[in-house]
Length: 150
Length: 150
DNA sequence: CCAAATTAGTCACCATTTTTGACTGTCACT
DNA sequence: AGTGACAGTCAAAAATGGTGACTAATTTGG
Figure 1 (cartoon, chains in turn brown, orange, yellow, purple):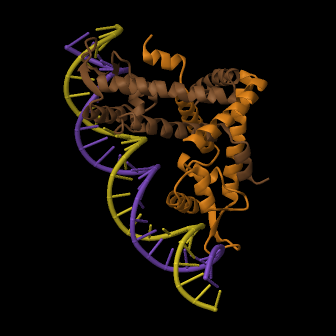
Figure 2: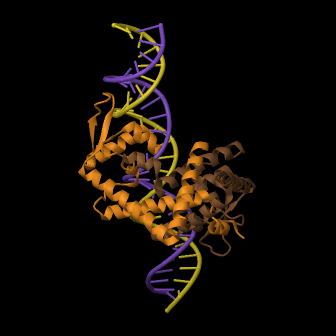
Figure 3: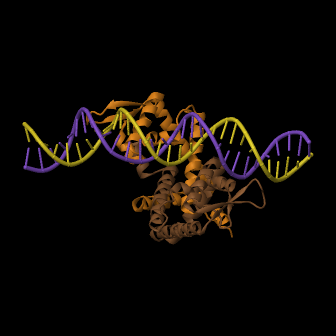
């Protein structure tokens, strides 16, 4: 069997992760676009995906998303311009600034979380609730192992 | 519970895919770099990951990797300069050119496949062979569903 | 056999994204 | 006070991604 065929029939972990990530991202942002958030692009997910309603520090967002803090900086700039977040001084540390979601930002976060839950629910219905739960359990272990070793 | 904590404890499918993909990619290319393939970057994976020992057409590589054919063109240029592949006329179609791996290219492909197999084997040992096999089975279904819907 | 539509690949260009190093101000610890 | 670490920004370079137009070869349909 050709290598390309083998990769198609038995894709490795990287190919599966890549396909899933990019398709899911594209689908999610298409749906959010139809829900009134057309200006937000997948990139901004590095901020919005991990943002707390109470506000988060740029450094924490950088650590959680795996992006450089410079990248977070420009993403926050763009989200400020779009009206999704504000920068406020952090009362606990005068070096830091809190990135706080506005009403619009909160709406995006809620809708985004809801769409993801719905998308996963569809997968679960298709492959079986139990099988999907077990899949998620093992995936979480694998992801943790990947991060700590890489 | 804070949203960021929840995402850390029960990450969604996108977060898990992203973490796994980027960690795996980084780890793989670090190892390959130590094995004498320091010049090859993750980007080149779009070509090398799907290349057949007998040679592949640029269009097929574009379709399989999801990249535009212009991107494949520049990647092949770079890999030719690095001595990993050659361009040969396709005997079956004079418009087309076959991208054929050199000895060096074949070595990279073999090592890359071997490292990926080893990485997955480590995961399987850690979470249980059976659980891992079931995880891969469901992941493949989920990835196919994601691609066709997105 | 010929004209039209398709397909493979390249060229030139532009927009976006990522990475790097240096820099200011603040904090923590001695 | 002095030292090292951390939060965030600035500025520039490198890498990456996407667009439209173009040539050459193939296929399709009269």
